[in-house]
Length: 77
Image (cartoon, rainbow, N blue to C red; front, side):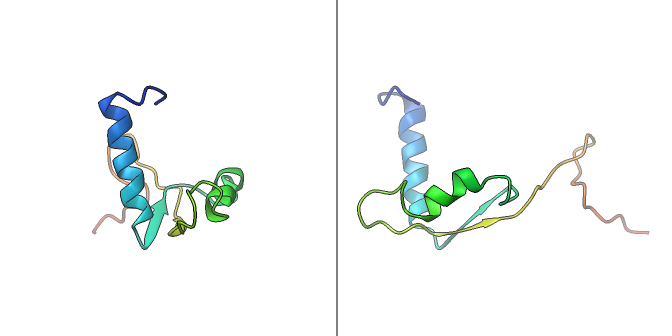
């Protein structure tokens, strides 16, 4: 990500710009585990100028079992 001439870097930056235009962002994590990361983002320390940060919702952990089905899946009887 340090090489700003790569396609990966440009793609990442496009995604970040689109996320900042969102009304909300859903993150697959537990907020209490990620406070050190989420707090600076929510406090506006990771955005340029007066850019506001969309509301971030921590929804997780969402996991997939070994058979590819979600762990919370309800099986019909």
